Image (cartoon, rainbow, N blue to C red; front, side, top):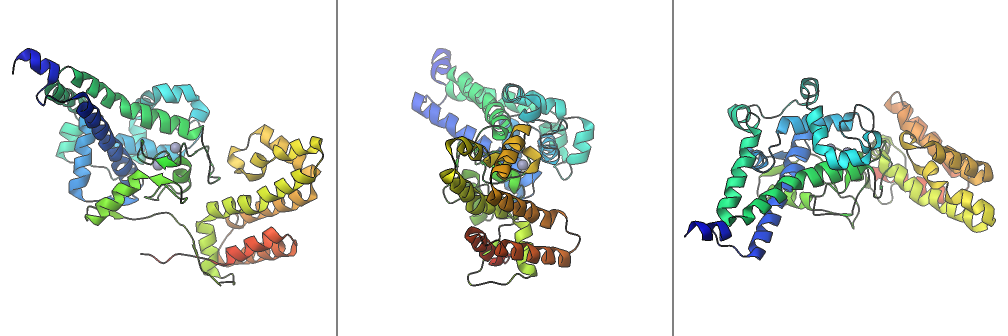
Length: 396
Ligand SMILES: [Zn+2]
Ligand SMILES: [Zn+2]
């Protein structure tokens, strides 16, 4: 092989289609390394990985991103602990979407200070290889990847390498940390701005489902609705079948027991553990139909008031804006029915936020269910009946 033909086609003489497929495969492996290893395994401990698989991911991340497990883990844990506050290492709500989208990696670099590493970086690899190679020489891996790409594909290998290098900064740091706290839909009213960007998590390994993740941060599975898909979860299932992974948690999802109609301690714990889903069900089955009902009988003028009231009625108090608050108050003064339902929503939330012990919690729930049943609203009676069927699921 002459130098010229090697430069043109590389060692493997690959066609353009092969080069594109190679790029998609290697970038996907990098995304899987981030979501399964760094995120679900290292930062959240939602899944245990076989040491050989965990090491493969460490090596691959060094080769393709130069990211260090301890830095990523610590910064990500801090993000959850301080979400949407000035302490948050990458909140688009605080720092602006443009800053996080285009300069997300810089935000990581600035946040990697010893204080954050010590506070949030416990339990990360600290062996000889980590100290002397992966964390010691993070740029060496990506330089090696450049040599491999050029050796395999010739000059076009430079493009392959460039795509690999921008993949994580663009998708993980930019799209997830930026857009995932800005645009998309919310299944749950978690106390921060996290949103699901798309219901099909393929391109970014399932991380698209960011609202589900912030609601159930210790779940190894990021999809919750039947129509949502999390490819990271597909890989975890495959690794588990090969005995390379063990799932530790899939979130505190309550089980529903058909025919169960008494409110006991088991029900109370199931409700508290799965409170975000309880509140989402309350919004879906009680509040939204009531707003629609008010809209259908209102004059054109007042109809607008009810239309604008939904965010204030439904969102978590931590993410309500002053304009949501104004719209909510306008709707509450226009409808006695919404007042009753909103008051019950607040009281339901207070059941678990103000409880002192298990007995008080159960008693508060009993009182709430009685008040809801006595309201005479059919949707509320059905909601209470469903609550009573909740049970803590048996561990697998
Ligand atoms: Zn987030
Ligand atoms: Zn997380």
